Image 1 (cartoon, rainbow, N blue to C red):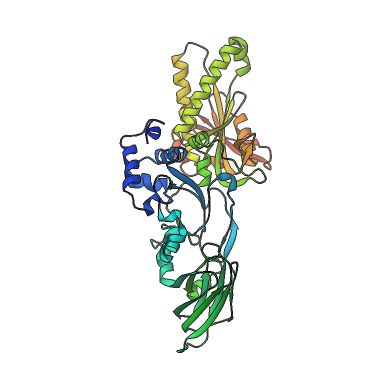
Image 2: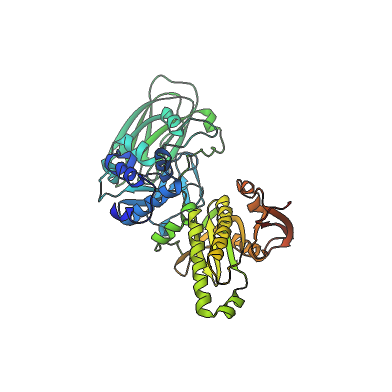
Length: 473
């Protein structure tokens, strides 16, 4: 705790609130903690809460995991302890869906207290009750039906007809009353699943449904069962313990060709974490599998460059000019960090920064100009003159030269947009200008739209030149 407290300047009582969580929080409160929920419940700024848990993970108080969520059920399908092992392909036996997800779509970064600090039942899943194994270990609690204040978990509980562990070499019996629709079963640990239609005339005598489970597949003996009582015998012929969650889906849900994605409370996505300076500083060893990058659906790149840097080196000499450039790098790093971004790399005298939210990039750019003005006013040396450009869109996170980097057309377009800026100006793309929240930040500034060719973009594209003085648009 002392190491965390000394890591940076924290707001009042942040550390004490964090320590109270560790000492007094119940087991579930310390398992897969969502830093944004922690911030909301304790009136802490979200960026500060994220940094708090990152430092806690770096110190070994908490373990950080990259969790793959099912968009339709909120089930935690996979959990990875390191970025390099993360697989974004998912299979959900409950929803009978599979696919690939981007880092910013249904990849949640969560934090669990380290077993070396406090042992939780969830650290040993084999000791959990069958209820806790399913509802607390495998499912998130905040997924809601689209546009409604109804938790999916509450809906699902009403449809469950039984749950059980399946010890190896044994036969497990479950009894249930079924209604028309479909009977499905899933092992939430392996995503092995089956589905049997429920149709025909209702019966009074129990139907016997035998199912063989070999550790990989469920094989029901009947192709269909009637509504009414049912006795389900599951024989586990495999060598490891299985689990079974039985659901009676109603006809209206069975008829849906595609189940809608749930609404989730805000969480720290994998894409957002990669765009945080604190993460990049504390977890430099984290890398993406070099064989394949990880997709990001939406990210914003900001490029800055010094105007007249060659002449500055000639005028000041290499040592003095380099010292000035380093001071300008430090200024940029601070401003980018304050606006929830990260400096990816420097390219000569230029900087490439990344932000998970478009408005943060604009706020950072405007803040940088203010800091440059202040810096120039405080120094008698020749002033620093910057030009900047920004663009948002999809990208791929990769590992280059042992550092987390980004690749793709969005990066190329952002660099090209920056090259169109003149001294003391920001140029941004149409995509960034149209992003939610950006136009509000630019209110009152001089903005000139013009068309320009962008490499890889067919025809000319609209670019917006932003001047810091007030002019007619």
